[in-house]
Length: 257
Image (cartoon, rainbow, N blue to C red; front, top):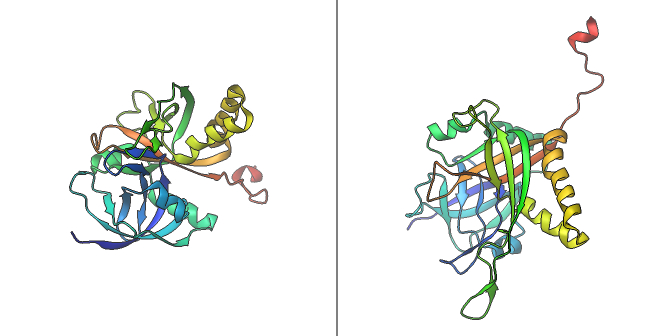
């Protein structure tokens, strides 16, 4: 097996799930490589993510290789112990430039090119929070408790459409579940703080719906599953920046009327 060292700008950190194969929590992490476009990095242990303090907009160096069991062209297996944070994008102007470079007008572009990762600046139409019973804990052989889907009892869904309608949103909105780690963690943090679910729902809706739709420029990082690589699209990352206000000194054609 040959390994290649890559420099990757992290744009996606999905909520952790338990890996039966690796017997630990793993995070589907994605970003853009310096010269090779999108990269999906898996398995990425939650412990490494926390120890290295890897954040969205960090630049990491990592050794990767093509997996043998994943048909998605962007997927890479990462070498154990090779993750290293080497930089970070702080400039808002540079962040906007990068997002503009990778944002696409329609999901149809990724579908036509048989890609499984894309970035869309969506028309957000609605947002829902669904609750279900939390799965009971299971235990490893050494007695360590775990849940396969620790964030599975709170489901966040967006209804949205592409800036330029694709085949699917011509006949109706996309409805996609949001797996962004920060978005899913927000509900739990607010509920733990207030203990009031109704108040938590209001605050989460305000942040993830109204602010994303009206106050921010928002981008969805969309990805697929290995089992259905070009069928089931999910929001794996949520990126936003405060909407820029038009300079009051800037004159428009109506100023001359």
